[in-house]
Length: 398
Ligand code: FEO
Image (cartoon, rainbow, N blue to C red; front, side):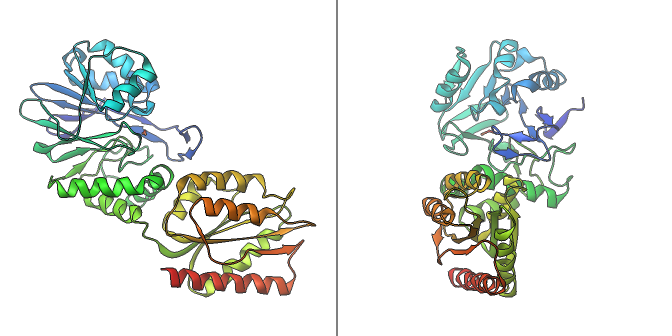
């Protein structure tokens, strides 16, 4: 195994999970796999920052052994309880018995509830420092980025921020740094990660970025716990996060629908034409055929959402129902929307969809558009016009 030195005597000792395709209990499709990043800071004292997902513990141990004997580890920094970062703790603590585990008070509580082990634990909080000899580790509590226990670790002498889940991507690569990998794929995965994991937490993320900027700390490398390390351009990901957290959007609409016999799809395509002819960027997805993770990523910078469904048993179809349940949890801000769809003898889907959109914080800007059975030419003209009207709302709302 090659030693991967990210700074002088600071090593990446994580694992690449090339085959991970479904993360977080199937809430996130990871078509490019993921990585679990851990870092070993070798100084007069030795600190391991985070571990890896349990099934990859032996890989972490092997990487550390290439650098130092494990029993020399003095500290294990647990930035986050979630099992993709703490899963190897039970294995590694057995091999470095003198190591003290450091984390927030919530981390201590969470680790106990996950593993029920009596580790030598030191609670740290924002402002606390750990002296390693030539270098120090400073801690910033970062609750809800991504769990209440989360924390960032910063090494001022190296201008190195290790923010755990923040600024990461589910992106398995042989390369470790932003200047070595495909920049388009990197930003695509960074955006998808933010949209699917961090979107509801934008307010706390923005405050944390402002707090870090106000603290005056200098950052020339961001080493997250998933994916690529930002060494060429850490400001790129900081700026992208600021924009997303401020709910900055484009004049763009995502149309997501489910159709029973194609009538709702005909409506969707005509609505799309009305939007496009008005100069609005549009993405259209049949939600029964599309990966939800990709759709949510497209929604992150869209001002408007149009959701459609045929009516079945006075309600929407099941795939769009599952999708909207997920959207409700995102609690998006500063977004507008409307609903459409066909019905047979009794409607109902649009009322249900509008209810969920309101709960999700989406402003409904125009009445639902419905048609009985399949739309005729006159109805298709109405769909076009309805799309056109929504385009005007997007422009006026921007
Ligand atoms: Fe990568 Fe919240 O765990």
